[in-house]
Length: 89
Image 1: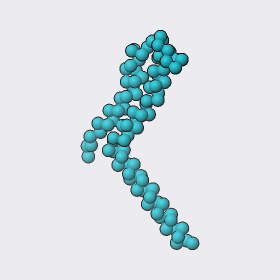
Image 2: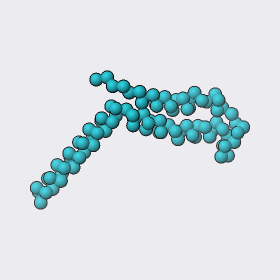
Image 3: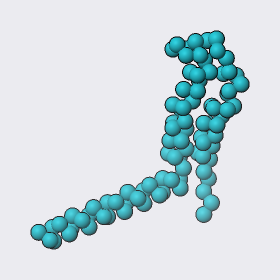
Image 4: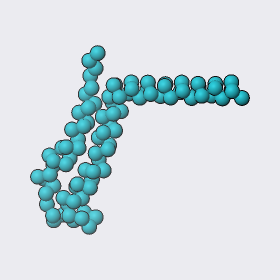
């Protein structure tokens, strides 16, 4: 029952990009795209957070199995609905 879920390590990405790098990015002087570096870094970290979550989900066997089961259930419901429409017409 125990599956290796090492892909969940990607979920450490957002806290590291927000908090772990903060002491190194806490400067004003390099202006990037008209923003102080800290503000630019936080903007980039916000954009990267969904990428980390997506990478964790794509590699997680439990999430993939649940997604496949959901797809199969949806296809089965569509087939039943189509059969009902054919039978009722």
